[in-house]
Length: 627
Image (cartoon, rainbow, N blue to C red):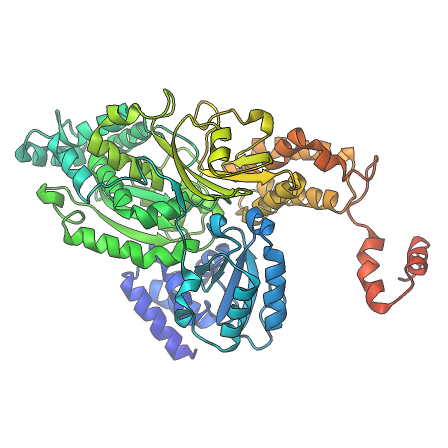
C-alpha cells in the first residue's frame, strides 16, 4: 500500500476515535486490519495526528502479539498450540500446511503471501484443533480442511469469501442452568431494580445524590446494591472477591472534578482451557449487558467497556449489533427506561493477544492505550482505575449473574449452590472426554460428577482453572467445585491414562514463559529458566538437582513476581511432580548434575545431513577435534 493510501487509512481511523491517544490499541488494530501490518509510514502518520512520540507507538505495538511491525503476509495463519490442540494432533496439521504452502513455521513465505505460526489458545478447546486466519477463527481442523485452506491461500481468495462453514463455531452447551437457560427479556432486570424504588420523583433525586456520593435513603441504587450483597455473589474470573463489596467501594470512592465512575466487563479469557465467556457472549449477550447496566445503576457509573479478547474478533459485529438494539430500546444511553439521570453506555475494546491483560489493572492499562503491564496496588481500581477514575472490573459470568439477582433478588440467588459459594458455575470442559463443551452446575458439584456427565473414561488427572490452577488426581475426584474447596475461573481439562503429565506441565510452562509481559525481572527470567529446566528434562538430561532448582524458582517467583502470572507459573510443575512423579523420574537419566547443552546432540543433525560416520564424529568431538 502506497504512503498516501496508508495516510488516508490512518486519518480516517484516528478521526473515528476523536484523535484520542487513550484509544491507541483500537487505532492500531483498525490500521493493521486495513493495511495488513503497522508500517513505518503508518507510525509516522500516527505520530503526527495523535501528537504521541514514535517510541510510545512502537512500544505499544510491540507489546501485543497480534500487532505486526514487519510484514506477515496477506494471510496470517496462527495455529492454536495449547495442550488440547496438541492432544488432537495440531503439530501434524501445521506441518501439512507449511509443506503445502512452502513456508517455514514462524516465517513468511518467499513471495510474501502467507505466514504460519502458533498462538497460545484460541478459546476453541471444545472443537479443536483450531487456528486463526487474519484473526478469524476456524475450528475442527482436519487434513482435508487444511488442504482446502492451502488451496484458497494459493488462489489468493479473500478470507471474506471463504466457505461460511469454515467459520461456524459451535456453542456446545451440554448442561444449562440459571444463566444459560435464562429467558430474561431485555430490560426485565432493570425494570425490577427500578420497581424497588418508591417513586420516579424520589428516584431522580436518588440518582443525583448517588452520583454525588450523598445519602439516598431507601430504594433504587442502594436497594440493588443491597441485593447483590445479600446474594453473596463472588467474582467468577478466578479471584472470587465479593462483588457487593467491590461495587460498594467504587460507589463510595470520591469523584474528582469532571470524573465519572466506570464499569468494565473483562472478556479477556486467555487461560488455556477456558471458553465459557465466549458462549455467554454468543448466547446471552443481553444478559451480560443488562448486568453491566445494573452495575452502573448500583454504583452511579455513566461509562462502560467490554474488553473482548482478540481471539474473539469474530464476535465484534454481533455484540455491537446487540448494543445498537439496546440503545434503540432505551436500555442504554440517556435517561434509561425514562429514569432521569440514569445515563450509561457501553463500548467494546478488542484486545490484541496478551494473556496478562486478563489481570484487571493490566486490562485498564490496555484500555488506556498502553502496554498491558500490571499496576502496583494500592491504589486499587475501585478508587483509581480507568484514567484514574473509580472503576469496577468484573468477569462476563459475574455480570450475567448480577442481572438475574437484579431480577429475582439476593435471597433467591443465595439459596442456590453452597453456604460459601452461592449460585452456579460455568465449566469449560475439554480434553479426553466424549462430550466437551459448557456445563453449568450449582456450586458444590464433585469432580467425579462432571467427569461422569462429560463421558470421561480412564481419567488420570483433571486440570481445574487452567495452567495457573490445580491438577487433581483420581484420589481427589470427590472434591467439589466451590470457593471452600476447588475455586476455578472455569477451565476443566481432562487427561486420560494415555497422556504424559510431564508433557502437559511442559506445555503450560512454555505458555507462561511466552506470556510473561517482561516487566519484572523475577518473572521474565524465572519463567525462562523454568522452561529451560523442563526442556532439559525432556531431552533426557535431568537429575535430582533439577527438582531442587525448580523448587528454588517457585520460591523466587512467588515472593518476587509483580503479578499473578509469576506467582502461579510453577503450579503445574509442582502439582505434577507431587502427583505423577514417575512421569519425571523416567526422564532422570543422570544422578549427578548434567549440563543442558550436549555438543554431540547438537551436532547430530549436521552429521546426518553430511553423511558422516556417527561413531567417528562422536570420537572426534570427545577428543576436541573438529566435528
